[in-house]
Length: 219
Image (cartoon, rainbow, N blue to C red; front, side, top):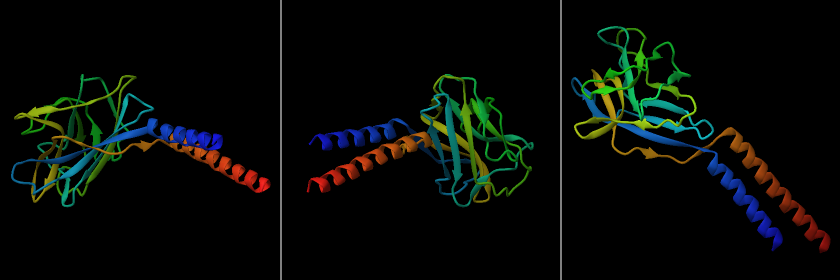
């Protein structure tokens, strides 16, 4: 009985470490069509935001556009807003670890994402001025010093908008937006947490093997 209690405690501790060290991913779906003419039926893609528990001043963002949708490269000028979002409290941040620096740059300035209104933070398109671009994904990190980061929203006719993306779809261009309640996914353990989990389960396995050998000797 003592052995079983010890094994259970070790297993619970290992699972607890996994839960504590797991990063939380929230998925925002781009569903609202603000294109000059319709960009299609939607949804137009997703924006996944992961909060790293080991770095409270960091958010990882991954944008994946849907099939038939791509980032818009055509604008009044070569550089224009490609993605816009808000943060609670308007903290000073840097946009870093951009996956596609040939086509995107962090601007961090207030911009109007027509027809949805102004957002406090943006990434700009800096690739060739023209379509099609063939660019359907983007990832980056939002970073500040020390304080937790929380996504904010912009009100559009009573609806909170979390992200907008300037896209090409169905032969038309314009902004699409993520509205409503996001989907929260399960936690994803960090690499260090995986290591602790493996050590914990390894210890549990060693205890089981030792117990089995003791049982054989007794028999």
